[in-house]
Length: 421
Image 1 (cartoon, one colour):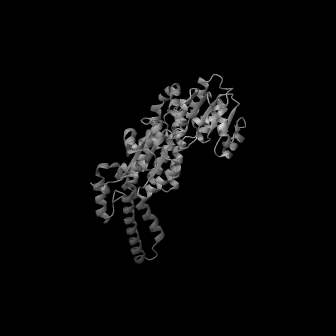
Image 2: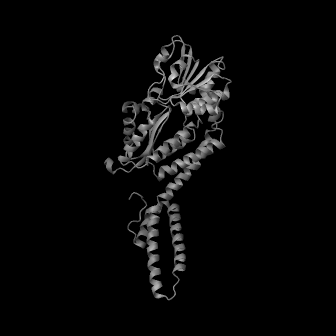
Image 3: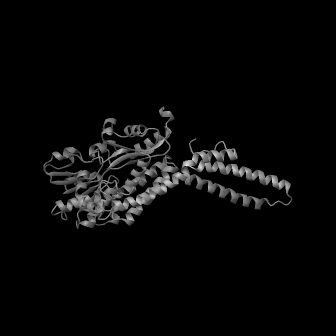
């Protein structure tokens, strides 16, 4: 069968922390602008339903295609990755497995730090962008809605997220456990995206440090944050190098595609702890050459959360049980949805019969009550179509035969079980 004749299937293609290290994940990271270009190209190529998720821990495309390589080629084109590396570290999920994978992501079961719900906001943003670019469909809308419902249910009714832990929290935990005088050290936080803001809040919540400076490329963002958190101060982006050279702990949470901190930004023999929370890494690797500098990245930070993870692991069965409930609801929706064309065709035929009969009797019977007749026959049509759906659901093995019988009875040529027929 040629690829042109293949039916479309739901695929999820991409890579994550499970197989790809920081460097490889960085190469496959897709910028916001490139995400827009990717979605635009997918739409132009006739792909119906697609969105892109690109975070520090994963880059994935979920969408409908005749072959997964349609999505893989888009990922390669709009990132700095290559096919050879993708083959080495990738995951490709199809249909039910793709659905299951999205539920696992949305509920924190597939997070690098088990139960970390930071991904939920990123998932929402990814889907929001796809909706804006008009690359979603009813199937993905329903699926995402149920994934987010399951996420909320798991968060509220299990301990999968107990003992706050995330990259932003792990950074503070590392400081507390490894820097003896961390409360008196100068801390500079560079970058105020979600991770940068959360990290700053954690510094305030878990330490008594009063020497915290924020620098963001957009100074107004830093000023806005300082208004709500007057314990910290906002530095100027133009003074970044000087601030770096006069701090003890540097937390980098920028979202650039190339390094924002290099060896040239540091003073000679400067003793400095750098926590790079960015993906791809925004601190140039050459910084490691400096003997007095300790550089810690996202992968290293994730290793310090083992104690909390043990508690969370015991909650996995409860989370999976909740997920199963929402997956069943989705499958029920799918099973009903596939009957819609057949039921609509039957209803259309019955309405035509209703119209003909009412028209016939209104001409033959004096004072014929058309409104009453329409009410009664409409109720009959509703009952017939409801019973038809019930029969199709309950008698799964005889669906094709049932469709054939109804088609012959009412002379409905277009009656079909397949929406794409």
